[in-house]
Length: 238
Image (cartoon, rainbow, N blue to C red; front, side):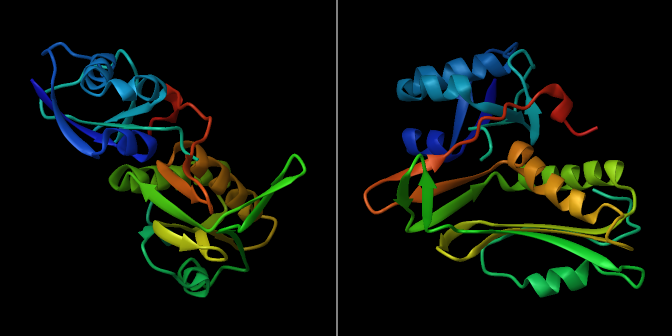
């Protein structure tokens, strides 16, 4: 049978393509697809072994069965609501207005909005040395990223039921130093009703389960920045 394979970030660069068709046995699992991919592109072997898998836009694991026509995505670890309150989930390829997002998650009963805003940092200091960044390039597995943004919002509502509006907007494409990379905004009736905690949880959880990566472009080098979190079956949406 044939399956469609999508590659992102480092895997895409090594393979020189982001989409291909593989022929695998009718009884194939995710592990078999990884093996077939590594056989086709030997340079990918170590990266594929460590890669996270998703089948039809949901996290999948080594022994999970695949079927003819499935779409299997491989990517490195990533660097909903009931309609009662406003929610925004967006992958933006151009600058956006934080003020407009705040207005969009505000209702007449809102008395507080907490906003987390990420920025492109031009200088990073670690271990007493500084590295320079010229720009970042963001890439996302778009359909799954939007699905997982909704999951993050649903988890926020489970933990902080008094949160009202939620906005999660992630930039993709080329971003220069000083530009905004992401905004997570959470509103509530009062500041002690979870909006601070929800915004913090939102950015931390996004970096775990939403498939978005960045390439750090420096004066002499360029490299994808990969995370360390490995999803578990509990990270599947309910």
